[in-house]
Length: 448
Image 1 (cartoon, one colour):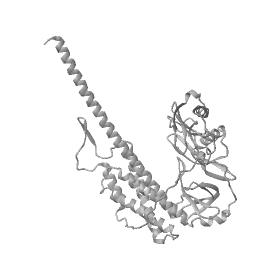
Image 2 (cartoon, rainbow, N blue to C red):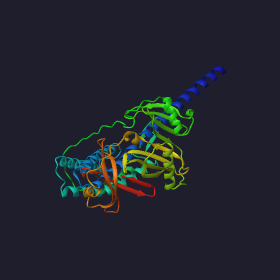
Image 3 (cartoon, rainbow, N blue to C red):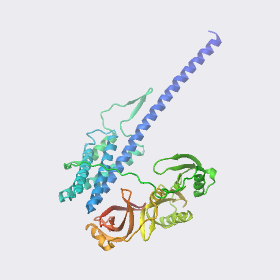
């Protein structure tokens, strides 16, 4: 064989080997990508299930304190949405019917109970003592199971353990290892389901569905449009940067159209109408806690003054991942307007403002038509449940799910386990409009 022929043959073989190896690598990467995508889908569903269970727990707890039909009706409809959402999230997880039977039964009965309550209350009937006892039973199981689901979510979402059976790559194909043994994920769900041993059968009837249309942003409703260039300068001034340091990315449509900008570890939006900064977020802010809450609050207040945003009162806050996010609500005539909300995040490491969200303020802020309420603070408190001990009160304007706002008295109360409960009583009708349970710990003060 001639030297030239040998060289050519070797070249062909090398090329063929390279193609085969390349195809193998591509196949391996595709299989890994597929596997990662599946795990991400499972993680998302598990996180949603945990969030829904936490919401169910809190809604049921509020239901024990609800004292009027409209409030009970609202909580029942919210509970139904949460139960159906949890059932949908559960159906997306790779867990057998047998291992999840207890949870499925519980969620179905929560949904059925909600539907029954809605049907009863919509006919102007009251819930019986037996119905309230069923509510308490549902709440007891939620208190027991919600922390288990939360722990399960935290355990598997960190990536140290797989959700579902382990997979092995053979050639260019992904094959599931055949094993009759249950996975750790299966066993975890079986353990939770066993929490429902001797769970009573409760049968209710009455379908229910509800939808609320999204409202038109009040602050920008009659505002003039602004150009991308104007919005870019507005955002650059807001973050104290040169215009060239923030780049236009896209226009986001929807109920509140905004221009989207990006910079070095920076993201922000400006409303198309009015040119108001809606969002601002920095990334990579550090996690050391060098500042305490009072110092962080002062820096957030100074920031709002610099932006000429006045009459804002702080309410709740949370410290998470090195950022203290503080909720500020607009105040007018000694009334806290909770819908007009701005969230300011301050780095606990540097003391600088690293996030800002004014969507609530843009959606709700207008010239509020605040009037004298028909009931006095002493008259309205008669609508607060006798199970609660009132320790304080003030005036508030709160948004409803209908998109409207209503003037209320906000009563700060103590519950049966010494938890703080906020009850909002309509200042004209004396009806309960909302109930919140205050969550207080070293990382902040939030409402559920």
